[in-house]
Length: 236
Image (cartoon, rainbow, N blue to C red; front, top):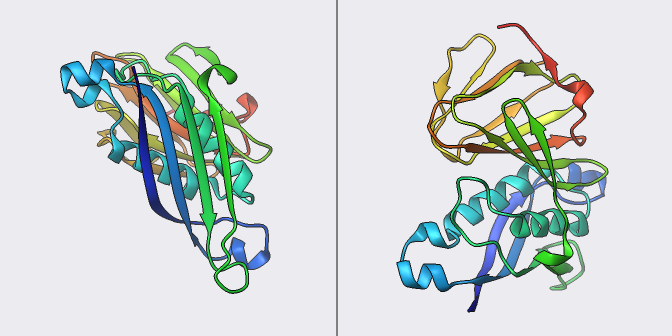
């Protein structure tokens, strides 16, 4: 059976726009979305793990908008839409959505009370997602534009993303699972709480290890999109 989840009037302060002044100061975006899912499992179990957590959804979308630093509403909406319709991560029990709609609205850029907005919608069956294999796990390619790429890194139990740095890409990462250990140059490894956001500057060594017994995930946003040649391993 189909149910529709609605999230309305989520406000996110982020860089958005093409004008020079819009690249200097954050603006408030309004996010409205709807998500069609098969709710049967959640309705029978009454367990949050069997459906979508609204708080987690808001956290993830806020991360993408703030770290994406988009120029166009169209680009931002497309990346959010693809994230919502992506297959669940390997440790998630939530159902994959059937379809989704994302609407983004800007304020204070047109005369009077006029407000521009962009609305995109798609079904899951319309979209394709690539998955890459690595020695430590897999990478789900969620979305790529000319300026950025959004990826989900799925790290196998007890496996490690080696210490590395980037010379071209700016990278931000959101920890989606427990038991993920991270480090940066000059610091000892430590367990990162779920929801932790890490921003890596160019030539800043860092790495991760999944210390748990289940596959763990990290949401990664690279600007520009990921380039394997820019993944430079650095000895610890």
